Length: 317
Length: 289
Image (cartoon, rainbow over all chains, first blue to last red; front, top):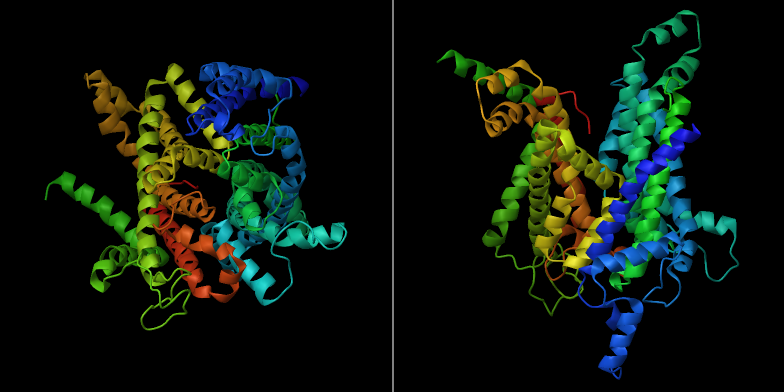
């Protein structure tokens, strides 16, 4: 097991490097030199600028700059934000929590909604529940996050003032968990909408297959309660492809978080990304990219390990 | 009728029959055709103008003069909706074509020649698929500029792995078949084998993936434009029409400025997905996306 994890991490390294190379070289193509952004000073003479350029290493070719940046990265240094002048890691660190909070809770919410619906639709195909859930999954898949968000804000923040439309806390009262929970309900629902559909379909599909199997008939024959047959015998065996799908959802969840956080002014990595792109703050853009790619790789590793937990026949070798 | 024609005819009749059986897909096809026709011809027929400002009507509610009202600078919303549809549909379809044109050759060659090329292509597709493409699209669009053309190309190029994988998988399964073997044995050139023997057998999943890709691309473009990082005003797209709904006063008091674009967006994507489902059933492949 330990060996497997080490090997998996070793395999992830080229992927990780690939992503950083791609994004670093792309950012270097951007119009406007970072120097102008850093020293927006009309009085600076050419010589001063030259000295600064050399100090920052901007006079070197791009690949040298990249290698330097990578060297710093390995020491845990992501550089300094052009926009705030603070270390990049500091601005990212304070945003990780909020993003993890809404992405993970929306993942949980999707699972809680989708798996029972998928199981019921597979158990009674072409029943009312089946049509309901396939309708739900079609509409969910066709609704962009931001439009779902707009409609929910319109209905539940503007027309009926149930939920706040932006931020993570109310500013006029001390921060509390209850207040935050109240703020996170709408963003969490919005992030779940696109995930639920695919998950219902996947659950239905793999349950339909499993329900044909012999051990399900055996379980029924020995007089198992139907509920137990469904959730113990069948679902456990149907879970593997569902877990794979959850793994594939992670990149979309992160992409969705960018839009959703922006819409709800949620102080997470996504809204920081949009802010940094608008102000061409490349060290921060790079930092977020690095962090997200590592998070996604770790996420995939966890999913792989879960896979083995679900199916003991899989040997990690 | 020769025997060959009869067989060919029956296959397509079969496909047609199965497609027509799928009522929702037929409806979706009709709706989408209608939508394309309207988007192409309405502007000329009704002399629509999405750019000129009506100084007498800033943010005016729907009326006889402005069917869907005007936006905050007095532009006719109905015109913007129609022109926005042009842009959104064009970006969606063109970028799906680009994804296909990049992904299919790569997957085909990787599956046929194997070796180091296969390794590189499949590894790259892993990288692209495990990383949130939204983030890359944001970075790329901000670096390369936000014209309609660059956004189409960026969304298109980043959509390649899906096609590459589909084609790669079917190429792998087809390349060992006897008819490929015999084609090679009689000295058919590699290019001909690829185009005549392997590609047609791998085309069904690609056609299906193409429809779903178009839907996805339309959603991506609109999300990007909603963030203000996609299609830039004054050019209209369904996404950047919705950009203005981020202002709470527009959202709460001027429903005509955002609801129609959003509904049309959802309905279009829904219909493309139904169409894809119908095509899948008609081509009768056991593929799910």
